[in-house]
Image (cartoon, rainbow, N blue to C red; front, side):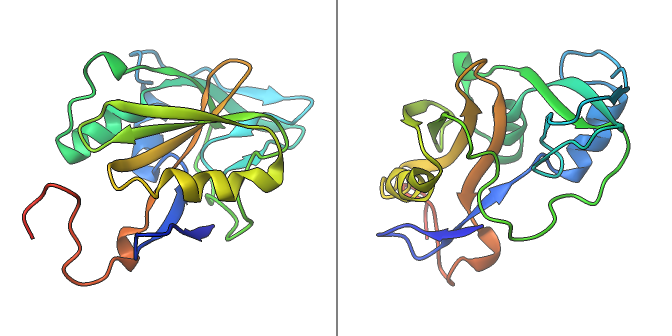
Length: 182
């Protein structure tokens, strides 16, 4: 899904867990444990690899994932005490990833949007209670130019669902983050 934030010229993009990270997690999760694949008899598990709910009889795994730690390793940020890991469902084997621009995933329940700064610190959060409130809440979050990314999380358990950040493929020439040269 692509959203536009006022005061930014870069659209926003929803990010599942990246493919290379999924490969790592299918070997050892971020807690150092091998995954235990299981058949999802009922379906309905929120899959972070393809941003949809599982179907009955799909093979899935519950793994430990540290999304901010992974982002910080890419960007050089230091999340300090905000580094955390938690459980996420993924397909036990490779999958095709998200099906396309199906809109914002997992909006049928209350969610928390947690905003992070470029240095990895938390800037705040917001409870989103209805599906039609997600896009405006994300747009509002990114009006603050200090916001580097937003994690969408489940309210019940606080689990990471997906990440939203500016779409680097669509940045205008000469774009730089606040506080960086050029």
